[in-house]
Image (cartoon, rainbow, N blue to C red):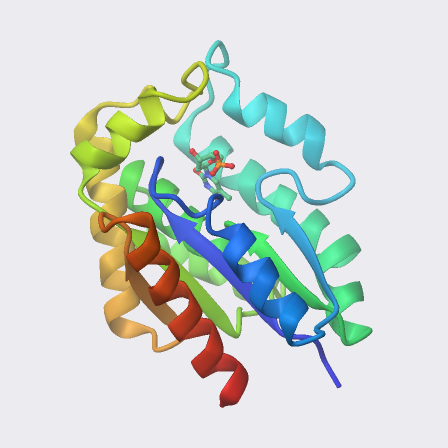
Length: 204
Ligand code: TMP
């Protein structure tokens, strides 16, 4: 049997990485074999591509940025995601294709049809479940600023991040696999929402 493919999405500071622990605990309790990974950076070429893409001193055009994200993803899919799913091992990825639609489509205002057709040509698998961590942009950016030095994306102005949030919410409204979590709530309430969606997915 194929493993399940779960992705986590959200704007900067949305708390998706923090909730990985909650997800791990539920999968462990259910004795599910899984690997945790992330984008950009999950495939063999990933570390180099990630460094390049996040480097605040690099000037990268929107189309090149999108193509590099897709190259990183193809490398990740072929070398880590598909081989694990084929062995029945679940794959949990911190970001995936919806990030390109939201950041490069919404944020950088590239044509989403191009991203969609590339993903079909590259035969990228569709996640079985996506958890979208959503919260107001102001709150999220304040959280992100408290962390380490800001990367190339985190430095962008507020309207860039607002367009990304809008794109994510639009994607969620037309895709049943995407479950939106209100990440502005206290951590305990956010955890409960994650548990609810994951448990419903496991029971389905
Ligand atoms: P992270 O900090 O959540 O690991 O994500 C790295 C940054 O890369 C984040 O600002 C979002 C951005 N990104 C894109 O712009 N497009 C993509 O397709 C992916 C996967 C990430």
